[in-house]
Image 1 (cartoon, one colour):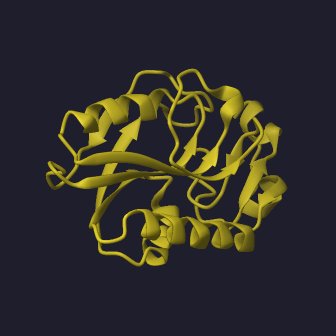
Image 2 (cartoon, one colour; image 1 turned 180 degrees about the vertical axis):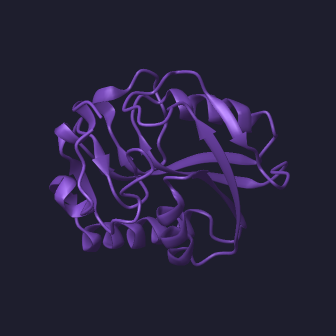
Length: 188
C-alpha cells in the first residue's frame, strides 16, 4: 500500500466539493422537513462513514428529530469490496416501534448491507422506514434498494472523504475524492 502522510496527495481527483455537498445536504434537509411536516423523525446513522453527513443533515432538518446509531460491517480492514456477510457491531439504543425512521447512509453500492439492515429494522415495527444516502453507486448494485432521498449518483470509482475511508483514513476530508488506485493496489 503506497500512501503518503499527506492525505490530499492520495486523492486522484475531487469528485464533489465541500460546497456541492453542503448545497445538496441543505436541499435534502428541506425535502425531508416538508415530507415529515407535523411528525417527529428518528434518524438512524450507519456508522462510521455516515457520521459527517448525519451531523450536517440533522442541522438542515427543521422538524423535531431524534437520532440513533448503528454500526454494521460487511467490509474488513482495508478491503475495497463488500464481503456480503453482514454483522451488526452496534445496535440501536432505543426502540423504534411506531416511529418514523430514516436510515442515513454515506454510500450505497452493492446494496447488500442496506438490504439486510432494512429487513432487520422492519422487524422492529417502525411506523415508516425510508432511506437517505449521500452517494449512490448504481453500477455496483446487486440488490434493488428503494432510495427515497439521494444526494449524488456517482461513477464506479473508489471514493474517500466526508466520512468515507480506506483503512480508517481520509474520513476527515471535507470533500469526496477519488482515491489514487496505487494506494489500494500496491503491496504494503
